[in-house]
Image (cartoon, rainbow, N blue to C red; front, side, top):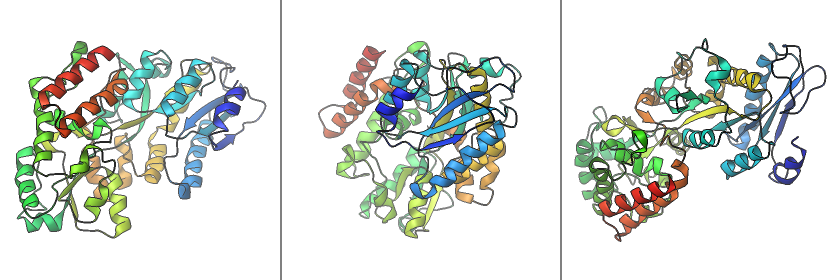
Length: 420
């Protein structure tokens, strides 16, 4: 079933393949025996991504292999095939494959992609497959919210990420700040930011070419606004939301972040090199600081108690002929032990409360894990990824000076309305 697609797409992309073959012959995804006994042979194809660098690829393969081995304890004749596809253009690849019945049984999504796929009818609701007795209680509340759409759970989360403020403690102390009493509000941060700018530092990073989840949206949420509300009400230009647009512009004009922030894609070096008081980042920055031998940093909580943090989930194709078994495999992939193994390797935060103990000896990651309850998974709407680029252009136009914050917000609202 996958032969034609592999020849034309997957092999051209040099996908890595890990195959675990059960006893007896198996059939390709979509040709299984849904509803059969545990002794029946069937194949599940799982699309994954390079969650780690090439140096840890074997370790990643081992984590996935162990998941399949555990699953085969219940289904000894299961054939689980892991295929790795690149991050780039993954959305288009997945939708193209699923539209021609050549896609995987199980694959990885994030919330705003999940809503789009669910709306297209290509996802199987896992709450229906797993039944009413499946226990979700160990998953953090916000991670379940992030995988829920139209009153159905479409995926089981395996990882969480939190973006928050990281501070250079040397600069902080130079301007009279206290590493033990970091800002929690805009007002507290701005007071320190003004002093940092006076001393010749940048106050924070702002990567205008990055996703709106890391730029505009946190400002809007922190101002008390939102992008889309209930009943598809467009809120990106509400009075509260406009305050978020205005704060970005105010900070930019005040020199809080560099002039090239309009189109900058990666300003992490500014923080690592000690040129910025703070950076808005995730655990990603911790790896850079460690590699550079930088120890003069402190982690602050998300300003105004809200931020962005993605939720990574595994979902099941509605076109799989093994929906129930694929759903069971997703449950296996995301159980506590497998989350411990996966997140220890990838340096993400488990979505299960019980698995966060992997960071008991890592105070930085433990602290980040405490903030997952403040992290929104993005805009949970099927058009979210469609209008993002157009809204981003309005943010850039505002920063360039061709639009006022209110005008930029209003034009963004019109674009969203058209896409919806």
